[in-house]
Length: 592
Image (cartoon, rainbow, N blue to C red):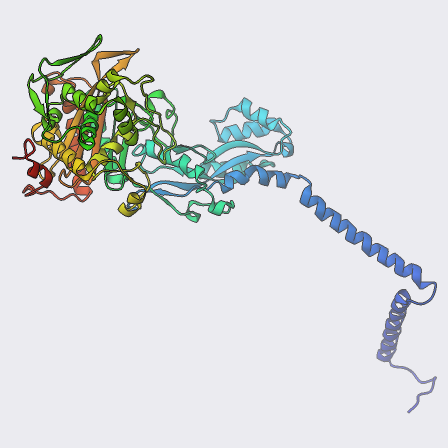
């Protein structure tokens, strides 16, 4: 039905017609822009393509610039990345007790280029962090660097106060701080880490050398929990008690230093190691003082009569002596050219091998060593790891002091513990081999089994030689100088060692270095104990004597008494019926 032109069109219909016309006009424009045919459309299309290309290139260029060009945020990330990623694994004892761990802390940094008023910033920061040096801080802020440290490892309260200052260009970065919850207890074993969480000494330095502080070596670890704990052989319980007894002895015997260790003779594991004076790993301000050295493996000393056990083992194992061999000590002295060596407690009679040990006869041990000969003596001590630097997981170690020209007189003095200076820990390893059946292994500070230890051990003496050494050490605990360390029920054996200290190239008659080595139980040793005192003094109960039995021996007995129950050694109040069967068959002195 049509409508005449004179008829009135509704308002709504007029609006709809106009909208259609507008949309048709827009479509016509778009068709005109993108029409690919016709001379007039080509410049328009080219203009659009050129515009989009320019925009794309601009975006791409900016992204490339941001990726390769240095800027403040990139510089900041680089400056703090080491601190953020320097997580260290927990160090735990053999029972899983934490000995060292990381905690999260915060440090303050500044971006000097963004700080407008350096003086005001310095004044504000030193007001809330009063231990800062104002001049040093102002000098730092006056540089054109993109990053400087203001203060490392601040408290949460200090962080809040600095935050409230609202200084542009001052911020915070999370870090890892190493803490040692047991204080000084195992200082020389653990070592310490510096403010950048880098291991400086002890097991901490060992961790860095093995790459254990970084997850898979990829810098992915930011917390200690990301890393596998390092399990030590140390038993924190006996570590504490060993340090406690040595500290008491240090005061009682007025010595200048003390040290000690407990070792499992069948695995080579060090269960405790102490050297006094020590330091707090969490605040190692005095760790580098010369009297803070680890005397067990950095100090080297003449071990005195402790070495007689090695000499006797050498003579027995070589076949130059047997358990019933005897040696005359008539005259009480031996002369080597102008050198005269005397007995300390001379008997003036003939002694059997066990008696040489019990009486600590210099002459008897010298004659055993000379029977083996100079070259044989050197070869035996080298086999026992006494002539070379001994390495363990602890990076710190010292080479022994060996005579440059080794003749008969050197063999004579070294036979009874003078003229060769070794680290006490390596002497301890040798004694462990003498009593564990003849297997020598390097000591370890990491937990390991007997099977693992046997794989890295070397047989150095015969089983029968080892029984002989266990036997004479037990005799010394029953009848000789080791009685001071005897503890009822534990079948303790041992050997004292007293050496005059060398001062300015000469032996000082009034300054001793004393040692006491003990095994328990003697018939089947499990643990080896060592106590050392440097320059102990005599006291009333000792009658003024400062020899090993009266100080190192006393301490060792107390350590065994406290440590044995913790280590699982049950007392036996009825002695073994046949503890040394071979010695009994041979009719050894004292076995009847």
